[in-house]
Image (cartoon, rainbow, N blue to C red; front, top):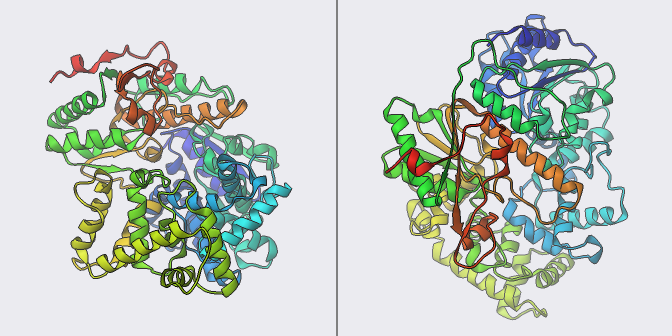
Amino acid sequence: MGTDQSARVSAQIAVAKHAPLRVVAGPGTGKTYSLMAGVTQLLSNAVTAARILVSTFTRTAAADLKREIAKITFFGARDIVAGTLHSFCFSVLSREGVFPVTGRVPRPLLDYELPFLVADLRDKSFGGLRDREKRLRAFGAAWARLQHEKPGWASDAVDRKFDTELNSWLRFHEGMLIEELVPIALRYFRQNPAAPELTAFDHVLVDEYQDLNKAEQVLLDTLAEHGSLTVIGDEDQSIYSFKYAHPEGIREFPATHAGTILETLELCRRCPKRVIELANNLIGVNASRSKRLLKPPATCDDGEVLIVQWLNMEQESRGLARFIKQRIDKGAKPGEILVLAPRRQFGYAIRNELVRLGVIAHSFFSEQSLDGNPRDSAACESQETHALLTVLARPQDRVSLRCFCGFGDPSLESAGWRRIRAHAEKAGTHPRDVLDALVDGSLRLAYVDGIVKRYVELKRRETELGGLRGSALADALFPATKEWADPFRGWAATITDPNYTAADLSDVLTTAIARPELPTDVEYVRVMSLHKSKGLTAQLVVIVGCIEGLIPSFDSTLRGAEIARHLEEQRRVMYVAITRSRTTLVISSIRQMRRDLAHKIGARLVYGPGSVGPAITSRFVNDLGSTAPASRRGSETWPE
């Protein structure tokens, strides 16, 4: 992997003193190699390993960094502090006792629990549901929505009121947003300038810098104040705007860090020539980016690119599964195959077909396993069951109690819950005590009948399931006949103790959902979302479901310039996906879809009568440019 570019970058890392270093590195250009080579040179220059901080955003990327650091042969290399920024913050805040002192409980809220929080914040000044959701995301970014804003304080009066009420809700329910860790740590360091962590590092190196929001960037600036700061990333792979991480972060880094040394890695040694060309065409459509291109090395295979279309999802899953099976029969390794799908329904369909053909395949849609509508009892079975399991494991868990009592109600029982919460706060007691009093008649509150009914159901289920252990518990909670239960049953099957408890099962499921770590060295076909593929590579990459509404997705709440920014980010997601390929790339779409499924997953169909409607091929296929191969019928390319 060594090149003149990467050697120059690693040398710059090693000699950097107080001048910041920014490295713009496209996919497959060897940034991890350069980063590790730079770390090795630092150690060879007698830098103390424990005074080097290497940080990144995702757990998968952090695991990769730790594996690479483990390969460094210098004595003490394992003392390098490496991991995600959130794990670093949690470690510091726990060690310093910040959580109990500030009255916070580090119990993270899962995505499906957030609608209940949002529903309970009902002040009219906060706006409608979408407005409150946006304020919630801004809270997690320390109120720095834009790259030029200073994180840490809500400047708007309504934001300040929202901040106060949100903190009150989290304290009462003994919960925390994962995103809060960075703002809390940033506030801690600002208020404690003598904190040892502020002078602990001579070198701070940040991978995937484009994935960080302004609060995270400022925290890293703070940690690097007495040392050197090196950031590596790629604006074209910035795909986390939901947390207010913007491509401007790395693009404008030199403007906010005086004296920045600039380096670029542009020679892509991962992708074949055709994929590089199509990737450049695609990302070149984005207007708000630096005008640079990935370049192939002098010796680079052409590779193989196929663009196919099928009649429907069923035909697509069968046809692509046959194609993958044929490639495996000809010598392709299953672990070198990635199937990327915009929604789990597409991924599950192909995975099931592969399994039917005798190919071992596993899906990784943990972020979608708890999808659903908590206001519709028929559309939130997975969410309700997870909340039930959490209560079985931890009967005093207030967040899960709140959720279970609100499922199936259009308002999530927010008005009634406010009354129960107010009574519990006034009496200084647990909300379960209030509910027990309502059930036995020793307490009366108005407009809480729906909540009491749900609580009675919860107690019935607790009694029914309380004595179950192991597979009997998993079968009762996650029936094999329910499609939504499939991933949960898979995670439960990984527990080695046959008599595991509800607490054991809850811990495994919560880790799989909230803190997933994607395997890299495997012997099976991996099926996952396009977002999840970041950081992975494979010989054969298949992208399915490339239709409007899914790739790109749409957000009806966006207006004006927000729409253009969202579309550019969606194009970056596609760019990330196609640059996972080292040899073969397949891009697949379908011609029609059931209207009920399209509505459920956000696909856009042509308006008209009937239960099945025409789908529209993703505009990104056209963005691949004139050199892209012509689209072919999948049924003719790989006939049954």
